[in-house]
Amino acid sequence: MKRNSVLLVIDVQNDFCPGGALAVPEGDVIIPAVNRLAAQFSHVILTQDWHPPGHLSFARAHQGKEPFETVELSYGAQTLWPDHCVQGSPGAAFHPRLDVPHAQLILRKGFRSAIDSYSAFRENDRLTPTGLAGYLKERGFERLVLCGLATDFCVAFSAIDGRQMGFDVTVETAACRGIDLDGSMGRAMRSMSEAGVTFVVE
Image 1: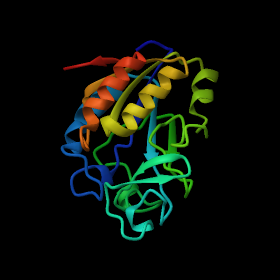
Image 2: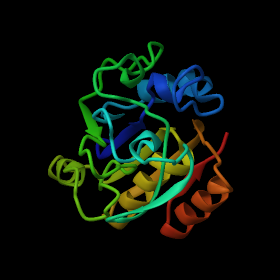
Image 3: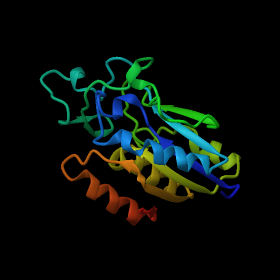
Image 4: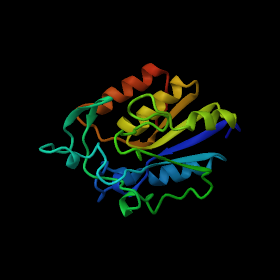
């Protein structure tokens, strides 16, 4: 691949795969495609959801609330989730069949207890940066290719933010799967398209 390209593998973790706390349907089906894709890139970055216990995005942190309800937090609307990807837990670990030994960076997100983080670039307050944009620009990367979980949340938010920060962004749809919560897949695909994200469909 081009020297200025990087593959961003989003949250291929046990809790987002079948049997996990917040399983994406067929989430593990994409792993062979992710591995094949990663083998084509000299530069690969992995993101890892990494929540402290009792994270504010967990339904259990809100009395009387259930997973997948929405609440208003200081930074706006927040979907509540089952406890997932708790720091150091087996569910937070990368899926054992993910085979990307040459990954150059693991970016952990969602570790601030009062702010959720879908995007690899910004927390959900849309203000707090993760530092990824600076890292990519300092290394001279111009083109990002994204894959992983889930299409309609962390992949989409990362892709859109990548475009807003000036990168050429492509999403490999065959190496992604979505949750599709109340039509979230359709909304995410439209939003990515409107932001100028391109798609590889196999």
